[in-house]
Amino acid sequence: MDILSAGWDLMIAHPPCTRLANSGVSWLQRRNLWNEMTDGANFFKTLMDAPIDHIAIENPIPHKYALQIIGKKYDQIIQPWMFGDPESKATCLWLKNLPKLDPTNILPKPAKGYWNNQTPSGQNKLGPSADRAHNRSRTYPGIALAMADQWVKYLLEGGE
Image (cartoon, rainbow, N blue to C red; front, side, top):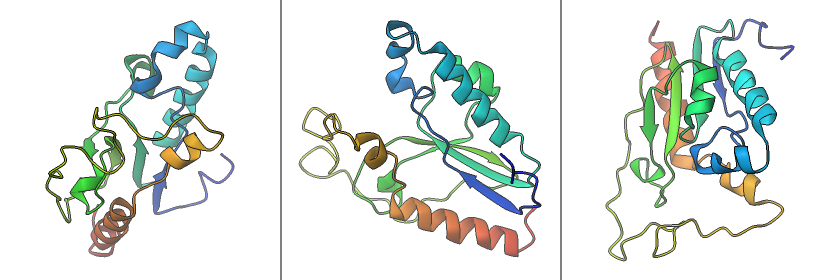
């Protein structure tokens, strides 16, 4: 938080999604996680409102409670398979003064009917473990490369 006003040109943020993602909304009531959700959404909003001209924030599809606090729906949903990684993981981007990402290498759905990170039922293969959240939060290389290539080019060409 101390460096948000340090005069940055661009911020690409990946804030924790643990209590904001739609996939975990059922736990809010069951475990009384409302305060954690509120804190997470407020942190997200602080990043979005940072005094930085160009901002991209990445997170999974949020639930309605988080969106009410964040105050803005995402600008784009992307998938790893749109950028050459044979996996499926809907990823939302909130953009400020940045263009949407253009897919760089759209892969066809595998003949087996599901992506590498899925089981035949479409569920993620990662079971419970101490580092599951860390492993699931990794940015796919194709998406990271597209962000770097496309947004740096946009900024170097005078993108406003």
